[in-house]
Length: 311
Figure (cartoon, rainbow, N blue to C red):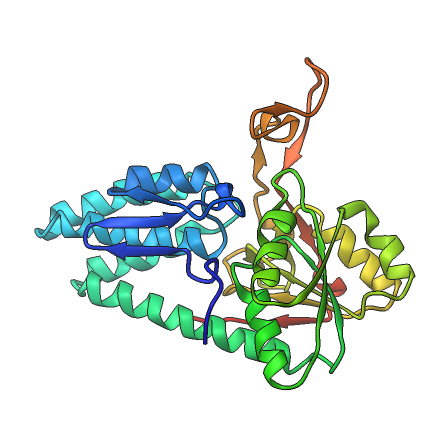
């Protein structure tokens, strides 16, 4: 099966990590090279890759660090430094889960190369299984609203559905300020020949009220133990609308984090410059302030079903 470039956007070749630069899509497919954890952490911080890409990149950053240190004491010290840098990149995604896993393997004297590569191979398979589970819940002619981008899972869901003679249509929200719906989701769905219509975030209520949407599918950057999720800003309001219009709201989830509820999840607030400018162009009058929380919390009682991916 052919996957979207976003399904697995980071690869390790020798001692160089090749990172699909998502900030250049869809105009150009290009790759950034990272040769140490500092460069990897910077790519995550700058959102050159996100979702599954930043998870993969974090693991590969640890692997490169491990290759430079064979003695256990030096290895653990180097991995802790790498963990500190990676954990500090983006607070809403629980990188500490990854760091603790790698440090646990290293402390136990386990083969990091084998464990990291094995984990990532398993992650690929679990992502495919997650898409298969989602398709089981879809009808023969569903019209799906999706918000933000779930790293290649949406075209995979559409392709698996097509193989089952299910014809899906997609309405993709724009997800400002990075236009991830326009630049990423719409692009990859069109790339594989699926029906896709772009709408701005503020159009969701009108589109739902007109009966154009039968399902909502979103992702999540963090899943609390009680089922609350943190996802791209704007997800919460779509969940409220879906409940109002009695539209099933599904979430493609990562493994459960240590957060007990959504209230325990730290929301990343990024620089307002990222909202006030786009690719160097000003979007607001000079001197205007902005507020840019990158995520919001959707309570579990607004979610029809979690599509889990337990590791």
